[in-house]
Length: 225
Image 1 (spheres, one colour):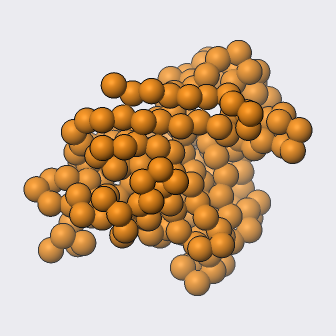
Image 2 (cartoon, one colour):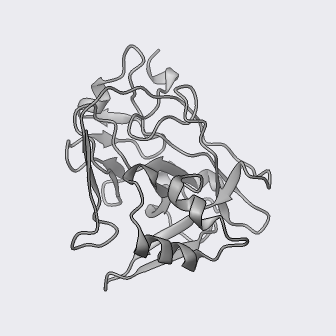
C-alpha cells in the first residue's frame, strides 16, 4: 500500500511517500545530445516562493549555480501529458495544472548541478544529473532531497545517503540492498541540450538495465563486481 500526503503547510513541496513492497532496479549513465523528437522534452523547473506561490520555467545549463538543485516533473509522465496537449506550451500552464490537481509523487525528479569538486563547474550538460525523488529503501519509501551543505542526496525518513554524481546508495538500508538484482541507486533521467540551449530529458526506458524504475532504482554493475 502506498500513502501520499500532499499540499501541507509548505505547499507543493510538502510531499511524502510511505510504502512497503519488493523492488527491482537498473543501471545507466548520463546521456548527451538531442534528437529534436518525442524522445526528449524540456525540463520545466518548479520553484516555490516564500509566500507559497509556485513558479515554473525552462532551464539552460548556465541558469543554475554549482551545488544547487531544482524540482521538476517527468516530461513524459501523466501530469505533463496534459501540459503537452497544447502546442508550444508556456511554463505558466504547468502552474495552472498543479493548482487544479496533484501530480503523483513518483513523477517528481531533482535536477542537480554538481558541486565544482565533482565536475559541476563546466557550463555544459556534464555538470548536471536528474534523479527520481522517491528513495529505494525497500521497507520505507520517502522523498529524498539534495543537501547542498553536505553535497549528498539524503532520505529524511530512513537516513539513507546517496552519492550525488551517480545516485548510488552509500549509507543506510539501501546501501546493503544491492545483491541478487536488488536496486542500489536512484532511478534517473538522461539529459541533453536542445538547439536553443535548454536542458532536456530523454524518455526513460524504465528498465533494470537502463534508467531504472522510480521508487525502485537501478543497478550499477561496476559497483557490484
